[in-house]
Length: 199
Ligand code: IMP
Image (cartoon, rainbow, N blue to C red; front, side, top):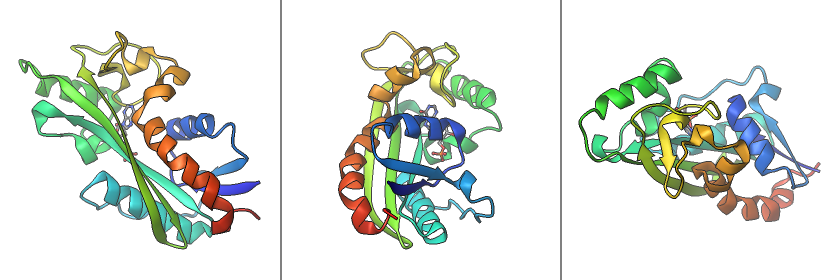
């Protein structure tokens, strides 16, 4: 059994990662297993920089390989906002969605994409980063109860349902996180034992 630390305390993300890693002989720990972990400041200017900051800090503190993701929603008509500020756009999910819909009022172009960058680090050094995306449109009003964040207003291309109307399994087949993860998986499988995760 190898270990890897998912550098997040976000329960929704942990559930998605546990599902994605279900078939692997890898135990995923999280920052909840390290209650005194001093979270680094996420002061990067891109998803890649923020994911790297989180993965590097966690791998150093926990002394096992770590991965972190940074993700967000980029809306074309808003020049890519909220982007890296997706979680800080407004205080709650409901307020973030309301603000987004308000900003898009009267705009014809509702194209958007979720982006996720996964960084893998060991001993405080980032080894690789992987990017995934899913494109779609922003709905006129929220639909569905599943998922989190902007899921109720994001309809992925090729579907007539919002992310929040899809089951966890359905979302995981196409999500930006699953996408980035698929690229990272092979690397994790091949490299984890070499990096010292297997003890
Ligand atoms: P971070 O990656 O934890 O810094 O935050 C990303 C933010 O982007 C989340 O708090 C959500 O607001 C949004 N986000 C990222 N991925 C998703 C998703 O799969 N569904 C809905 N919102 C998401």
